[in-house]
Length: 91
Image (cartoon, rainbow, N blue to C red; front, side):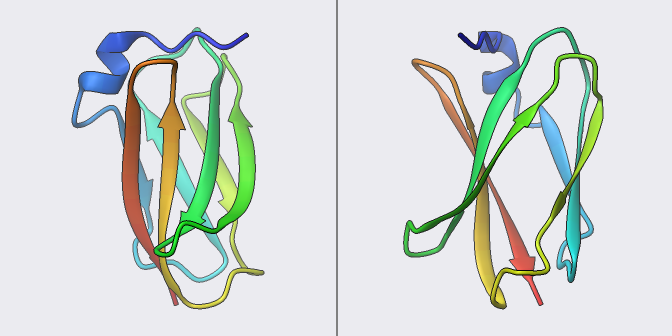
C-alpha cells in the first residue's frame, strides 16, 4: 500500500522534471521524502509506456526514456483521491 500525503499532491511545486525537453532520461526531484510514490509515464493519447516506484528515501530519481518515440508525455503520480500530471517532451 502506498501513502502519498495530500499536501504533496496539492502542491503545484511538489516535484520537478528536468531536462525538458529530454533525450535519454528525465530526472525528478521532490521536496520531501518518507513515502513511496507509484508513477507511470503515458503519452498524449493515454498509452502507458512505463511504470516506476519512487522509493521513500529518495529526493531524486532518473527514469530512462531512450526507448520512447519522440513526442509529448506525462508523468503521473497519484493516490486514492488526487493525481499530479506533469508534461515533458521526448526529442
